[in-house]
Length: 176
Image (cartoon, rainbow, N blue to C red):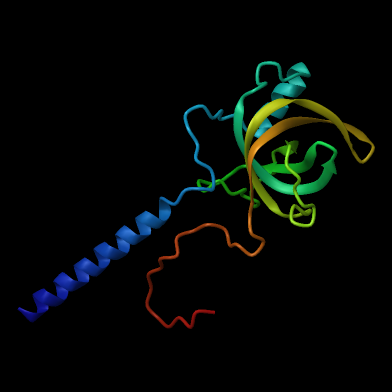
């Protein structure tokens, strides 16, 4: 009888651990998204640009993009951020271990502090494709897909990549 009680407790503990793990995997990102969001990636838009030199069919498409900040400039009417795009994980965070998708520009009507929005920081944003801006990378001409940002999320520098915090194992953990 005592063995059955212990097994019942063990099964309940395992069930609770599995439920906690599955709930942690359901965590969402910083943005509420709906069905109106385009699935176009930075890379797909860049490929369409090189095929037709315009984005007429994609203007006003709502997108969720992210990447690493390359440069931040404050302008008279807001802020412009140059971003190296990366695919996003299920929590809307850029996956920096993947291949970059290309550069794009983010325009915001808000003043965004360049010290906070510094080179190397990870960023995700919701916005609408507004066209192509011509720029340079070094001495080469570079057409940038341009996004009018509606929401911007700056990821914390010390924030670890998202993963469940539940682990199973046998041994000693000192928590370092």
